[in-house]
Image (tube, rainbow, N blue to C red; front, side, top):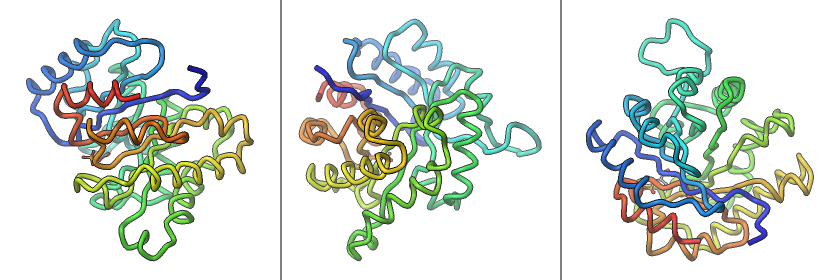
Length: 254
Ligand code: PEP
């Protein structure tokens, strides 16, 4: 396969799984996944599971740990928050930023996300940056500009070197946790559009290497068709990442 891009399947557990359940799930994924040098797997458990899941992943190839969020400041009096350095120190390689649930329920806007991205990169984390439109925006027909605007505002101040450490994840809000998946054509159209915007900013060779994941009710039954689209480089998986068999079958869908 001469795909110039990294292919990734990432599981966002959100606020699910108690500690024991989370460790069991991570162990089952590790047992069922074997890295063949192509698709990489990322697990994003809740913060208190991170250190234990890092141990479970230790020494395994092609499978990485991610935080679901981090604070924009390096450290300090921010009760209840977790820093990018803390995530690094337990062995996380990635952090998810810009998830629509963070934007919607925690008021995270483009400006805040820009500072979180900067902090994460300074700490040596790689960023999985989520973007996506509401149903209202899609129905108004402004979704292409809206989603491109999200990545431009939070990411396009980055140098080419920094941007190499960012994976994009297109997640239409109307498809998240709703069972309503974007059609492969809808996903492809948005991914191609985002790649064009990356190309305009960072050049064609860079854009060709930019990994763009799809997220939103991705499951074993639809993953293969979504991942076979030329600009879809894998998935960010919510609900289906909580069952090892479903998640592993998505990982095997390329
Ligand atoms: C997500 O929240 O990132 C997601 C894609 O969720 P789900 O797969 O459950 O739609």
